[in-house]
Amino acid sequence: MKSAALPYIHISTAKHLLAQPDPVSLVVWKRDGSLVTYENVISISYDFYKGTRHIKFLRSGEIRLVRDVCIYKLNGMQVIL
Image (cartoon, one colour):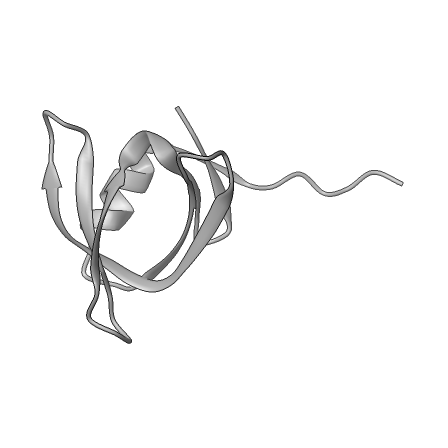
């Protein structure tokens, strides 16, 4: 039995979705190669030259820095470059 393929979105579409004020779910590659899931986050700033963005967790208010190329999934859709 074949598994269903994940829907794909291009990185430019993902950047457009992250620019919106709506909360999203992210799955991000970590430095050690593992994946971490960030639920209910918004992008609060973006650095075009570095390719990074600050995301804010709505539940805790914590802010983290994420590289756009490390985003694996956005709202359950796999991000391709």
